[in-house]
Length: 592
Image 1 (cartoon, one colour):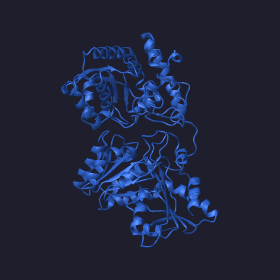
Image 2 (spheres, rainbow, N blue to C red):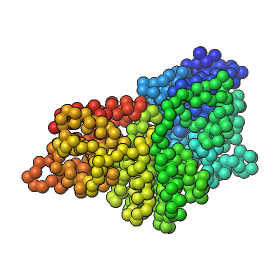
Image 3 (cartoon, rainbow, N blue to C red):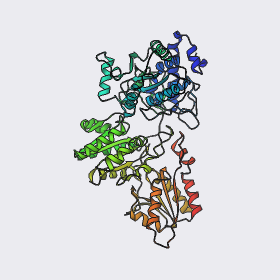
Image 4 (cartoon, helix red, strand yellow):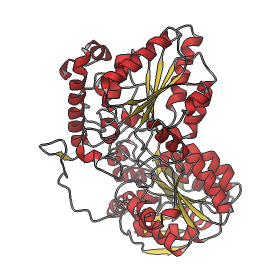
């Protein structure tokens, strides 16, 4: 049966009695694809029946389906021409999120939460304004509904009673972990039938709660609603669908932590309920997230003022050990990065030492709060950015390459990008202990080197390699190993090179500027934007400090260009961007 499905029309043509079998086949193929390549497993296992029903009820792409977040779109991809999820999340293969480059059925690369309602409503309203009314669907998880963007969109949608927007609330009581807060409690009451729904009170229609794994009931309700909307007989409506994350795969259902929300490749056993770990090399190093989590716990033990804040990602950012030992000092605000930073500002004002941990890419959403709530008021808030820089397989919206350029615009913000686990612990301890205002700590994805030793330290930073001072390589955080590898090759060629880790990436220190002005050529390496980050700041400071009549050293900033980056391994992206060691060697040769 599955071999005959390549378009939504094929799905709509199936007899209803065949839908449960289609769901079983989809689930089996989904497991096979994620087991081979890794990816978001739990969220997609939970929406198999829902996705089938949606494609039976609406006519994609004319009637768009916007997924929020897009990591629950694998089944949608399988029903719209990408049946095998070929090379999922690998270079040249199928993206782990919706991608307009792949299919006209993919509307928004929606991997940041809470935007789907605004998108769907906007598309739908445009159709009415242009005289071509159509139904539009937003599929949003209960965790994403905690985000302010989603609540703003609901408020706006309720003020547009003619809208033909369907908001499918995929309620599995989880984001990564169980959903928290007042809205989560309200949805629990709705699931038990114990309360009137808030959506009706706002002026929206409400259907549910529905069993998200009863494909025939879902199809019947969604088809009836879409038909009424096309006839102008129903306004904007929330369809409350109750699903189970990881449904149909025992190992995922039994995973208390996150229902196998995201996983690397693994081996399937003879039965779907078995999961056998794939052979792996012995892990000698902790991940950056694990190192940060251990360090956060150590600091919390030392100072009762230390309080951790997460935006629905307690475990992914490493706070689980702290939560287990000191649960009262781990606060989860839901998928609401802006609230995380504003709340942190208030905590700091009240005498606490808040530590906010986010993925770097999600920090973009809270720049205003970092700038005008925290920095303007000089509050002692430390923000830790996990997955900073080039992250790899999750694609353009998950690379954390904007944070340094944004941070450089914030007056008084100190930025550290540790090159190894030892420096991460030291930087975190220093930021939490001092009274010098806001600080930002950024680190990469993957394993953290235990220690990359320095030859000596001075006020310009730590020198990690030196064969002379013709070329100065200023390496930021995760780019230090690349700089060292390039410097070693250059030294073999007789080019004298010094590699400095400034420790404090921003603001640029006076001693580093003096060191740079004494070199023949200066190169900065950062896995962020080439323009606007550390390199730009250093060059500007050098120009300001250069004595009259002295020529500035030759200068080149290695970094990411202005384009969005593809999904591929970190090493491959570095090569594509001209940021790997051979590229550094070539450029130094050119300028020396």
